[in-house]
Image (cartoon, rainbow, N blue to C red; front, side):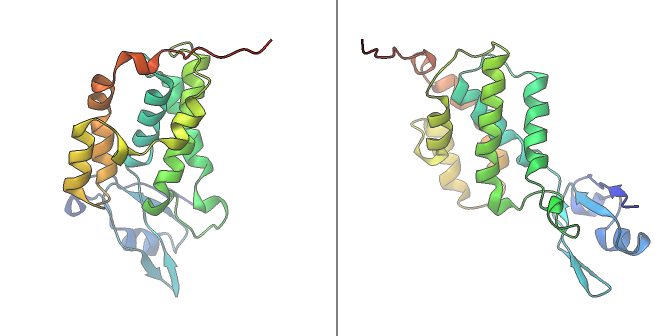
Length: 193
């Protein structure tokens, strides 16, 4: 009853279909997400948001989870749990006319949720040590406050551009490589007897 149509090619000029055409062809019933940004479409008096289906929705949270847990590798289950977490944040679950993906304004919050579940999976799958402080690492993480210069330089160059998330996802290996191995060692816990 509600076809899912995903014209994902980039740039916008190469898109397989234009969202306004998709809504006309399906009489407003389609769920649409595109690879390039498109404006919302007005059809028969209703405004339909057009979600952008992009790796920016998963990769920042996935990378943050890997960093927070000090994981040694990224597993298939981490991608699956990240996608599940993202789907739980889909606005369309609350409103059938809403977007398939959260807006870019909500990506920081969603990324932290994804990071938390990814870190938990990394520990469960034994590709990361158990670090009791990983939830705090995820909650307190702020790209702009990292001591590595590369992500800060990127943030300064890009300002508040939406594409900063994509760039930051690409910077994850640099962050991992420049952090000291000591930050991923379990900290001794104090015991009171």
